[in-house]
Image (cartoon, rainbow, N blue to C red):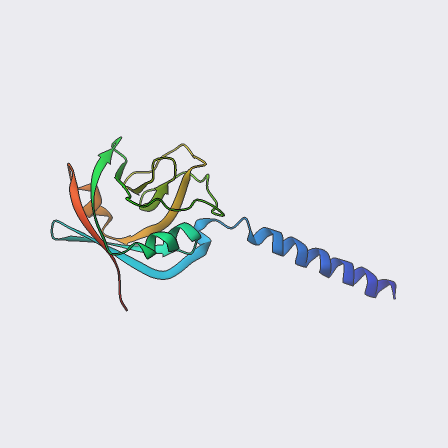
Length: 152
């Protein structure tokens, strides 16, 4: 009987810890099957979106045509007409090269073509570039982008 009670308490504790740990998964663990395509200057960038509320809200706004500009030599940014909700989304990870993100205080999306060392609690990673990183790195000045979901 003691063995049964001990085993039962271990199982309950294990399930409880597993449930808590699911809330702390990183954005990279939440890949989604949805991809978007950014088209500009006869170039393309494909991004795999993550499965979080901000990403889903962004996808609901597509298709979009917006203008990007360079910001601090590390990212291309564009202010969205309609802000995304930052509620219930994990933030605080430093960006890395290829991240497609949303910066809540300014209401802008960003494509990081270089990593950013400092973490911020206001940056939400929406997805990761799968192909075409070099197209973002090699463009200078403002550029207009059409963003649409990729159909399978």
